[in-house]
Every structure is written in C-alpha cells, then in structure tokens.
Length: 411
Image (cartoon, rainbow, N blue to C red):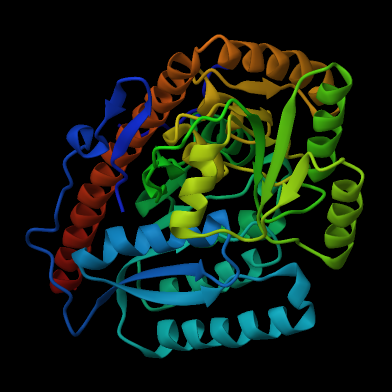
C-alpha cells in the first residue's frame, strides 16, 4: 500500500555471540527476495540506476553500492556519478560535472529508458538531478523511482526539488524514503506522493567478531570526522565522565574531514592524558574489530542534513548501543535499542553523561549480554523490514516496466 497522506505524528552479516550465549544468524531471518522473472533488457529500451559512488566513501555512496547490487541482477545498468569531497574544492565540482555530462548524453542520445532509479543529491546537485529527469522524460521515460537521502530539502523547501517534482510524472513516480518521519515531513512540504519506506538497514555490510573483554569501558567514535558530526562533543563527553570519576577510554576511527579537524584532534588527544586514541580510517575487517571492541558508540551529530547514518545500524549489529542526537530518522531508528537519543546538541552532555555513567555501571555488573541483545534485536528488526521493502520495490518496478512495455507496443 502507498502512503499518500502525512502521518499523524519513519554481504549479509552472520552474528556470532556478542556476549554470553547470545547469538543469532541474520541469514535465518532474511526476507525472501523477489526476482524479475520475466524482465529482459531489450536493445530498444534500458533500465537505469543513476547514483553517486565513492570516492569519497560516505553513507550515501555506500547505499548506492548496495542498491546497485540489488538492481543489477534484474537488468539495470548503472550510470555512476562521483560523490564530492569538500576537501576537493573546485576540482570535485569539475569531476562531478564531467561525469554528469556523460550521463546526460547517454539519457538524451542512447536507448530510451523504461525505468530510471535516481538517488537524489541533497544540495546543489539537485540541479543535475533535475536535468537527468528532464532528459529521461524527453525520451519518453515514465517509470521513475526517486531515492531520498537528505533532510536538506525536507526541512526547507527547495526550488530545485519542487521543479524536479513538476517534471517527474506524479502517477508513475515512486518516492523512496528512509523512514516514516522523512515521508511525513516531505508530504507536508510538497504534497501527497506515491511512496515506500526503504531504510539503510539492509545496506549494512559488517560481520561482528568475538572481542576479548578486558574490563575497559570504551567510548567509540566512527565517522568521516567533522565538527558537524560532533567530534567536539565527543571529547567534551569523555572529559565530563573522567571528571565524575568514570574510568573510560576513547577510541576514534575515521579520516579527518579537513586540516582544521586534524589539528583539533591532535590538540585534544595530547590533552587527554593518554585516554583517547585516533586510529585513522578503518575499513572491512579492521572496522568490524573496532566496532566489536567498543562499549558504546558516541555519535553526537549536529549535521543539518543528517538523515540515517549507516554507522548507527552497524553499531547495533555488533551489539553496541549508541549515544547520539535526534537528527533526521535517528530517533525512530534507535527506538528500543537501549540507546540514548538526546533532544538537541545543546542538551547532549546533560543527557549523555548520566546515561553513559549508568551504562558503564551495568557493564561492571556483568550485564553486557543484556545490553547487546537489545541493540542487536533492534538492528535485525530494521534489517528485515528493509529487505521486505526492497522486495516490494522490485515487484513494483517490474510491474511498472511491464506496463511501460505494453504502452510502447501499442503506440
């Protein structure tokens, strides 16, 4: 069923034991995947995914890679646009513009597209997204899926998104939202649309590993490190806990988002008395070991466009609770996970300090297994719902493509 009105108020890992005898296999609870049993890519028409891909590696580019894996087996081609790293400056814009020109050329002069799935930008890239949709419409494409990954145009009306919505056919365009809250706010701002909720949970690629518990309570931070992602608040939390006599260690992972951030990290670590370490970027098995070794993930993001950070689901998959701020979809995503979602950045320390202090005491009493089970159960719930939504999307795209082929054959 599609929601057309605002709400009243939105590698498969195998989980080894995270504590005690708590273990669960994610594969055993996966939703069945639908297949395009009859869909073929004809020479006269094409199914296309247009999305940003790494570099840089971000939550959005990671999701694009996941979506490509979901759609390509069903006949979709991928038209990749590079993500943009703020550190690239003008060079990043030029690289993206060149790649986008190639996409526009293929849309205008290549085979007509039966279906286009477009992962939307959250900023000035919406101008390019508008051009993609316009070119596809000029060539007769009617079946379009728009995947939303930013609250930038949800919290503030965007002229470019409004224009894109005028170009995309309302009756044959599907909107994919990360959570019910995102969908409800979007509908309030832009009006009813055909939509599905499709979270990032199915895109999590992580494998929890057994970690030796040495009695140290570790506060982890994992992100592309920026001030907007709360690195200052992270250090403030560590210092506030130490001042209260809580024995904690800080472990930071991820690349510095700028030279200013790198300088800040060096200064605050030097003042931490050896309590905080920065491991730099971690990927694959190294990142899995990091997540399995920490006691809680601290992610005090105040990024205005924050939507649904994949790292929070990754932490829950490892049985690690989260201390964060209620941006975007975060509050609903963390509900029932044993995590703390602070009301705002200004309230973060006031709420986080007693929560972490209480959590450290629970760990000291040997309640690690109970904490881990809550976190992992919430992740599994979100993952299964996301996989079911993906299956429903595939079925809908299949039906849309079939209708489009029938319409063209009768033309």
